[in-house]
Image (cartoon, rainbow, N blue to C red; front, side):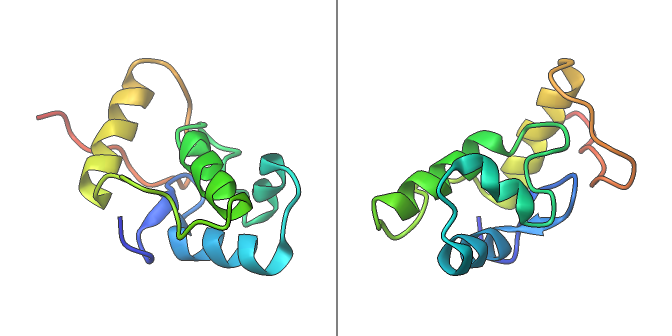
Length: 99
């Protein structure tokens, strides 16, 4: 996943925005990342990835490892939504058609 790819597909929050929020605001709890344009407050898909970024910052690591590509990420989120695990809000990035 590239820095300008959306991490929170519900609220169109990029990986770069989250990284900058962590760097500048220095949140003490992962839940505070929701203050970054609502990241993590929609369907819930991005929460594990937000946690990885938060934990990496706490450990002063370079960043989250092994994030999928933007396409893979969107496909995995679509499967997550179809399984009934979350409901995206109006205006969220559309789900990817099944292959």
